[in-house]
Amino acid sequence: MVNRYGGYENQQFVAEFYDSEYEHLRSISKDVDFYVDCSRGTGGRTLELGCGTGRVLIPTAISGCEITGLDLSPHMLTKCQEKLDEQVAEVQQRVKLIQGNMTDFKTCETYSLVTIPFRPFQHIVDLDEQKACLRCINEHLIPQGKLIFDIFHPYPPRLVYNNKYAEEIEDLPETQLPDGRKLRRTNRMAAFHRNLQYNDIELIYYVTYPDGREERLVQSFPMRYFYRYEMEHLLELCGFRVVELFGDFEKSDFSIDSPEMIFFAEKK
Ligand SMILES: C[S@@+](CC[C@H](N)C(=O)[O-])C[C@H]1O[C@@H](n2cnc3c(N)ncnc32)[C@H](O)[C@@H]1O
Image 1 (tube, rainbow, N blue to C red):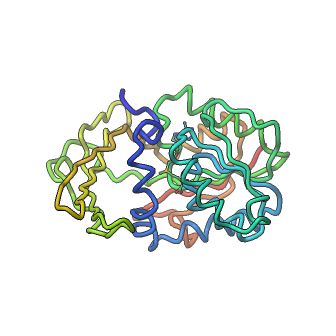
Image 2 (image 1 turned 135 degrees about the vertical axis):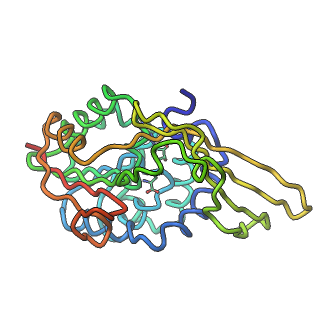
């Protein structure tokens, strides 16, 4: 299995393009405001696992919360640090960044909230590693501390072989990068492993340079999908009680058409 954890740690171009693509794609889904409110509502320190370029972490620190970000990818963390360096000193002082694997980490601190925004948990394909991650989180929470994270709500037609999804689908219209290059992105399911509950995904970046030269770069990784009750059992097994389950970032009840599964769990 190549690129076990999303390929962020060994494919530098992913970190380079991440912010321009997700500013566009996630602007409609309100996840940043949602997670900032979660940290503000909890009151204590937050640990964000898979913090990436700080898309959620930096607004959280700007809102006045103390937050530690952990990520496996040095490239994503470098981007995050560059963005943090542009903030005023008091925002910078609220943030700690750690390079580490969320399946096996020790920060030597405890938190009132752990978050995993935008599906990093789905990069953990192996069951023992999923349990190790949840147990590690549990050890880092104060009594009754919260774990909040989102994963997608499995959509059956995308989980079995289907020409429609095996071929490239445009997911990011062409945008201009600050250095003059143009970027567009497609995605495809390269393989379907229904028995193992993951798909091999390819995110394909087409870059056009100002001199007309073109480049095609592929981020490929396995993406594990979870069913609702599987996740509830997994959380219970690892020392959590599920408190709430929402279907989107406006906190709608989880329903048949919900795009997301957003779990609120509490340390038992
Ligand atoms: C889709 S990005 C999400 C980034 C950020 N949370 C956001 O909302 O923009 C997934 C991130 O999870 C990180 N990641 C994946 N597997 C990881 C692991 N096992 N431990 C730590 N970070 C991991 C990747 O390096 C990447 O930065």
